Image 1 (spheres, rainbow, N blue to C red):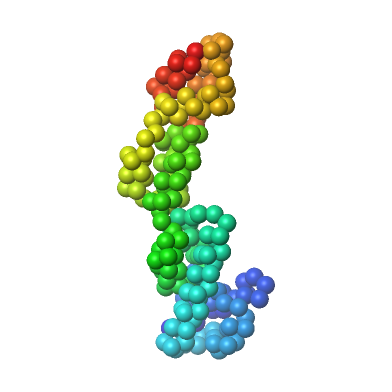
Image 2 (image 1 turned 90 degrees about the vertical axis):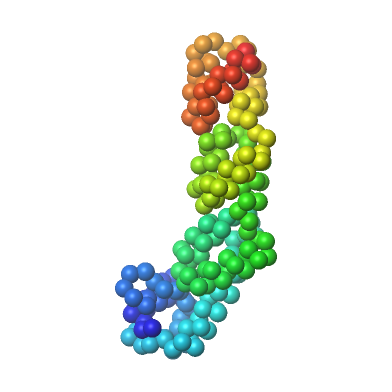
Length: 199
């Protein structure tokens, strides 16, 4: 494969393009020299394999660094690696490594998320947030089915924790509270049940 373009990126790194458009990968300037990469020059198969091996190791280290401070989904890790201009082969190698070591597990992530957020978020909002994190609809459905959360209980706990005793609320205060809870994704019936029970 022929190098289309090499351009400066950040500090002492450069982006290598194998075709016009998206960069194929990012290397340090010393690595560009080490592998004798030049615009218009072919990358030999052996050299390319060495580059993929180097970038796979670097991608793996990047994943471990990202996982060190917080749990992440497979989608989140893939996105961060792609933002760092790691080639697809390196991304796949790093993700496979992390899965093999059980460093990432989308089902486990979803279970913990539901357990933590079920006291403050509606089922609808939990689904949306998990979808944004790249968790599949199938896993989300299974995890929510396996959990014992009910929206009415969640609304009741949220009201008690955030608003305390609402038995003295007048109609205007109740409507304001209902609108606030609706905006958080809770269903009207669940809210009405919880509000009427606590009044």
